[in-house]
Image (cartoon, rainbow, N blue to C red; front, side, top):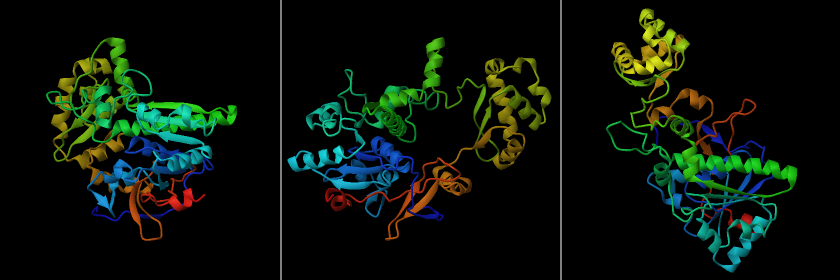
Length: 390
């Protein structure tokens, strides 16, 4: 457990914008569960359908908390869990009844498995013609790669992000979080909300096709656009290769700092704060393009100055001069950030029955208030009687 106490938050009422919307969620791992959790945070009622062994992510530990993997509890709050054998006639009938009463159906089964188990769009809309059907797969529902299996790591490799992440002389690196999964889940939630709005207007259901590879690739929009327009292939550079001339980490007398001098005005303010206005006014640094040509010299000069004082001093200087700068935090420092905690981002969710689970909030405030989850991540099959008994 962390070396500080998370604020305790009792289950409450999530944002109610999707109140009355029912989602049947067959997804596992991260991408699908994250997408349906986002829908639940906005008020949707999510029924999580699991096989007897449960969502794969339930076993993704250690670390575990009360027997549940913390990766699982991170992306499954607010939901109700039921266990079904979809290969049995009884399980199939129960699923179709749930779908007939639902607005949204979400699956992350590969296309061939969707067809084999009759979980594809054509079969699901037999239960409800105006259903919003959401498929989240590695490569989408069409094309020669559609049947390939995929995880976040594989999608990151396909997308190009790994090739431009890491030190210039080092190996390609995966992003330190399941970025493709989280982006695909967010895309699924966004598309679902748009489809629900359109259905209110037209009465028509929709088939939504989300690809981890395409969601991750779209994340590189600015880098790919630059290549398509210039022919210049981006390379790994330890985070220093940017269209902005000075946009990178630096060392100080103690701890590293990030610095982004993204405009001529910020450039001028920076050198004023450094007490060397004359250096900043040199004609060979008059524009971002010229500063890029002289990047090595400028970086060397800035690094020389920053090493003379500790990071805390520089952050104070830069804050007072309105210069974009910040620390490079460890995860424990992020979780202990008093400002983020004050805005309700990190908390321990309790249900009044003894269960307490750490959570990362929605990170969206509406009408000056954060979202308070309705329920803890469910135990496997916790709601069988409640849901299947209906």
